[in-house]
Length: 608
Ligand code: PEP
Ligand code: MG
Image (tube, rainbow, N blue to C red; front, side, top):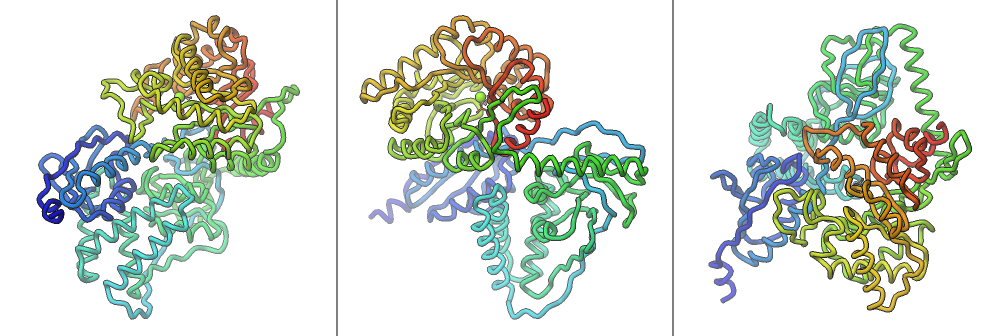
């Protein structure tokens, strides 16, 4: 009976909207497909009259879904309703977590020699002779047939995905695996497979997915290798700067083990898989058209100012060498001194704390030299599913044991931060709607449970609780009152806890006198404060507010002047090299930044 019920049950449908600036691109599509494939029901996606199988990477990619597009997801058959809900949740999470690769800003620097300008993939300076990429196919013995070679390739990518789980690059291997599985299904022989790869990558030419053509070539090489046709690349055994049109993602690992000093590619983009892997491997690299350059000539690759300097003068070479040595020495010094205090040249001690999101990032912060946690972005603990009271309490307990100084921010959802299982009202402008502390009104149960978990985990220790997106004194008073009620209800002692606010909304600047009477501390969230000061959405694809605008420093100066309670900074600005001296001059004594910037920021402080 249930078999027939499932078979003839009504299809379930849901409209899904692309909210990521990157569109629905290969990596999230692969993550979606890898889950969709585990369900036996039929799953399709429809966009503008085109319906495709949502269990295939390239069929889903063929919809070319961009930010703002909406498509219909349809499930039909066994547990259709449940599957639809699961995929909906997964999709929302993927969209939320898909961060845009920001173009690295170029420094201004001049040389006497001629320069070819380009876009930075991975920062650094390299000085070495140019080497042009050379590869040739060599034949080896193989007993595998096409299907066996295909499956070997899929298994290899699965293994790479598993071993890279802890890195940002893991999903690249998952994406390639799903793509290979999807292409493989449509091919019976190597010739058919080659033709399909050729046809599909041709279709990407000039589209937003252009840079993914190298993934198609990579997969072809992987399968051919198992059939005995290996692409052999040779590299010099002395330092070199590699010139190539493009590289295959799978070649970066090998390249990183050579004497490579830098890489200049002609035909990739800053968010191609090759570029992501180059950044991950820390190889100085640039995108530039170097057709006119000759191999073996010594050049400077300046991936801070974004240029290749050919025919550099001896003075250019000396200057670049000095900068390179200084960079390396600074990095090494900063790293060895990361556990030491950051004291300015005038003897002022600046506290450097970390912005973290969960237990593992808090542990990393400790290893990187953080003196405490200045911002625990607690929403990350809620990212995939709502944690139970016990799970939350345990996570807070683990984090709290790591440092004496900790500031926990209550759930900051809304705007650019969605939770798949928390339905917020559809709003024309969510950045100005239900978000941050306003959740105390709309989702009191979730907030009460979170506070209870924090209080339970705090066990009478000192701790700072911070409310996000505060725009009025009443909001703070109500949130604090709410917290007190939670403590009373569960008979938890919160006498040791301090309550403060994030300054992200400009109205706070005009309410400082009243806030001074009620809050214990302030933390300036420059990411959102900048967005609201300039009315430029922080994730906007084309509009960008000037991160170092005097407007922002004036705002900070005004806050510091009026505040009678401690003020710290926890937005991106706090780790900006150009901003650090200015912030310290304004009287800021506590910075909270991402762990990877701690060693370098402490070193910057020592030079102020
Ligand atoms: C900020 O807005 O500056 C901030 C630190 O918070 P988030 O980036 O999490 O919004
Ligand atoms: Mg914020």
